[in-house]
Each structure stands twice: as C-alpha cells, then as structure tokens.
Image (cartoon, rainbow, N blue to C red):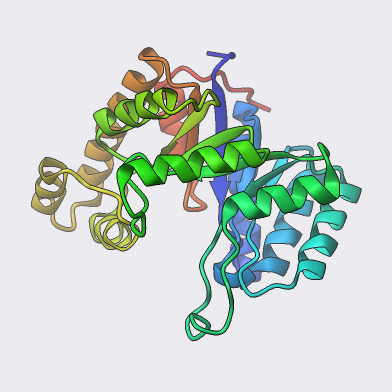
Length: 281
C-alpha cells in the first residue's frame, strides 16, 4: 500500500474555532503520512489569504502543503506575488484550476482557463512547482461534449501539468471508462480518483446536484430511507466508499485523494479499512 498515492483536501476555515479544529484534523490525518494536504481556493480568490495562511501553517507543521490556485478576479501581479510567497516557503506543488467567479462578477472579469494558468506558472517559475489539475470522469457541467472535455484536459497536460485529480464519483465504471478514453486520446499522466466520504444525505445531494456529480439512484434511495439516523448513514457510507476505494485500487487506480470536509473520523476509518499504514504518536 505504500506505493499508492494518498492525499487529503481541506477548505480554509474562517473562524478561530475552525482553525483550531483543522489543526486537530491535520494532526490525525498526518499519521497516515500522505503525499500532501491540499487547501481549496474560494471563487475568484475569495479565500486567498485564508488559503495562504493555512498552507503555510501546514507546511510549518512538517507536512507537504499544496495550495489550490486560480486567477478568478485577481491580477497577474497578485498571482505572481502569491506564487513567490509559496516558493520562498518551500511549497513545491500547486493545484491549478480555472476556478469560479464570485457572485456578481460574471460579466466583469474574464476567466483564465486552467491550461492558461499552468502555462503562466511554467513561464514565470519553470519547474519550481509540480502542477496538478482537475479532471471530470462524469464530464464538467459546462463541457461542450465528453470528447471536448478530454481534449481540454489534454491541453492542461501539454501546458505542463503532471497529474490530475478527479471530481468525486460513486460509479466506478465512469472512472475507468474516462481513464481509458484519456489513454486513447494520448493522455499518459496519472489521474487520481477524488473520494467523497458519505456522512450526510441532504448535504451530499445538494452539493452533488450543484457540481454535476452523479449519486446513483440506489445510493440516494438507501440514504433517504435512513432519515435522520446518522449512525446508519455513516455505516452505509463507510461500506459504500470502502468498497469503491478497494475496487479502484485493485483495478489499477494510482491512489486516492480524499475530500475531507475538514473532518478526521470518517477518513481515518476509510484509510484504516483500506490498509494504509498509520503512525501513532
């Protein structure tokens, strides 16, 4: 299991209480010695300073921190300054994204696509950073077509990205079909499955419907049947996601990237179930 990629994703909390909780969550998940912890970047850079502060704190704590980055409403100089801060801190990996604009900015700012951001970073920083990009096994909600979505993923790699991380999914065939279609299109780079633990029915459905991730009907119906029974939802979710991860790893996925939602317990149980070694202090 040591040769399989493992990483965890956090979002930057906005309160002192949230920061303190995240420190504990980080300490718990760091025991699995993941390759990195990534930290998300709000629409249009709306969490830029929070993201930067969390990334630098995780880095000081001895873990490999990986900031998400997009242009959004920021100027080139702002992005360059942030990248310089990361370089000086010893950060050597970036998740480069198109990102989204904040509400009300849709017509006032031109989005910079991920392949353009990758090219921009390479032009200014050479090989300082490893660049990871997003991939969508079930197609990006705004994609013109399945084939076109894969084409644009290929452009990200041609611009200088080295690996992809997928949006979460629960249909394993979607991932492997996507992987095969990427290979057929000449994309040889590893594409790491993104994994979303199941802990809350309403939140999962709302978030999935918004981002275009499919939750199969049988999962929706089973979760719905539990109502407010949190223990049953957790047990079912652990079983479903553990099975998904086991099959992904058994059938050749390069590793797993967990969307933690800043929670430690479920990801800890999943990683234990999957046999990732843990170091207890």
